[in-house]
Image 1: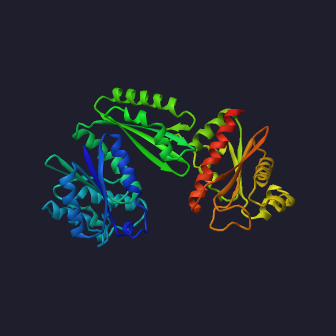
Image 2 (image 1 turned 90 degrees about the horizontal axis):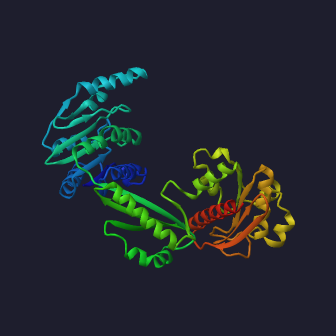
Image 3 (image 1 turned 120 degrees about the vertical axis):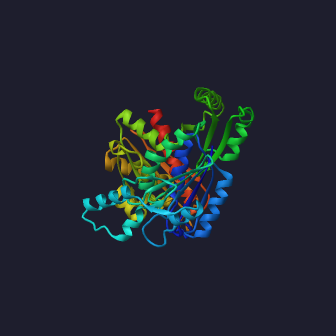
Length: 414
């Protein structure tokens, strides 16, 4: 069963907002066995919408539309859908009462323009929006489904979870789609592919492998699709076991939720230990990753972004003589920063980074892309030099990932 997602709104096409709706909808459809064939973003334009609907109808069984359902004249999705289905708009009194009740609770006046939101195509099944005023609309024809949803993310998600997904599962006999993602660090995509080539060539035909590279890591996603859930899960588990024997040195976790920062959090929580960071070239990116994990306040004490040498000296007790002798981009300064933040925040572990993210080199003899990472543990301090290339964003992200990788290794040793 295939679906197309159509997002409507000029604000998406001019880059004013990010289309997060499509990503979320695709993930949720996939969970119930619906494959997304295409994602399309189009203007608030009648002819563009009609054309997109016609093309989607020829390609897929399910069309999910978001956006263009507001009360103002630039929101034309509802009118265009009525035209597409050769239909007319009628006033739905249940929706009128719903909107009136919502506004009464917040002491907001109910106007004629708000009443217009209760106009829906006669041929659709309205989907009541309990978090907003614009209803969703469900159309069925020739065993196909077209659903129109508001573009406001929290409203769209509520309607999808409570209305659309259950109705799709009732209407169609859907296959089971199972994903397993193996997360690797420290090796590029081409080298990983070379190491696992023979294993990949022998994968069962119903299991597909995708390489998902990003700065410092490669995610290997296995996707199995079929009717028998247990057969798929058992088959994928067997392939993961084989893969774990081939590249045990670079596998650091499984599935999207099991990130390095999540694993580190679990380890520190189990050991009742704490962590702090002192960042220069990474600018707080490591602390951001760590604090993205719910409950990180149990083990993460805090961070100092010591961008200037004076802050390294004043806040982290890095000796000025060390900076003068070795420069700010050096293993000696990285280690002093790690020791300084560890002592300042009284933690078991500490991460420190210093380097040249670019485009300039801050009067050091190290080229752009060179980063020193130090890890302070309860018993010792280690540091390593790395070259992460260009551009600046790549250096910051790869340095952050490598720092977390080194920290995890040190935690596991102790």
